[in-house]
Length: 81
Image 1 (cartoon, rainbow, N blue to C red):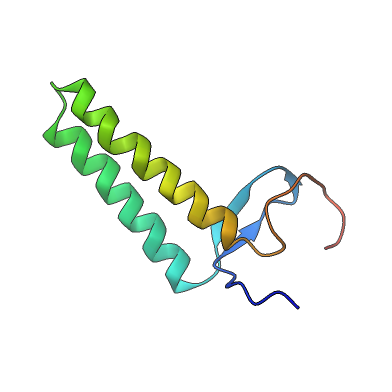
Image 2 (spheres, one colour; image 1 turned 60 degrees about the vertical axis):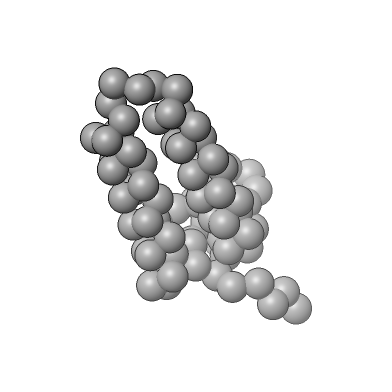
């Protein structure tokens, strides 16, 4: 049995994650959007600083989403899972 939390649902077709299914997933997504949008407004004229904030935030978000996706992140062909 896998003891990992399940915060995001898996996509039915393709690779990746779909919308959050728990409040923790929604919180992670909201924080990610707040960081990226806030950084875009604050550092619009400083692209190096903007990318140095957005790139690590995106990597962190994707790692969290991958580890907390129901059934794991893998390719799916649309079957009943």
